[in-house]
Amino acid sequence: MKGEFTAETQKPLRLSGIRRCAVPAALLLAVVTIVSTPLWTVFSQIGVGRSPKTSDGGVEGEVSIGPMCPVVRADRPCPDKPFEASIEIQNQDDQGGHLTVRSGEDGRFRVELAPGKYKLTPISPNPGAPPHAPPPQSVTVESGKYAHVTIRYDSGIR
Image (cartoon, rainbow, N blue to C red; front, side):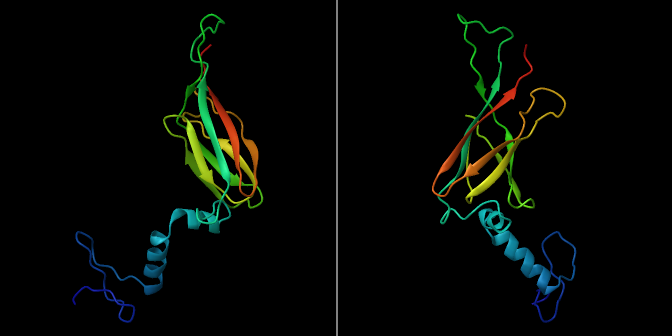
């Protein structure tokens, strides 16, 4: 068939609306393999995550932001609010691997991880301006358990 790609001929690959180009078979195989591989498998290969079928532990937590009122008084409570935020997780035993998770609207997140020591770095949504991200924290994941963390962003309200 005209425009069809085969490993033997390296004929041009033709896709609708895309120019013709010759694609080496090895490159095409690598791209298909990566695209068809679930992300948790990729993360487990870099030492950060594990397959949900074999992992039975990880990190879970809540992210909040506060204070939400300029003056907090005992008779007028002003609780912190859940906060959607990105948190970078890096395996401290393998400095090369990391992933980023995002808390939901309710401020909660949960990620399956292999046992080990991890550094959680909250990401500032507006570097240099409020809300300010808290400093990184370390957590140890044990087999079969979820380590619980609380992350509190500073709203800048005073």
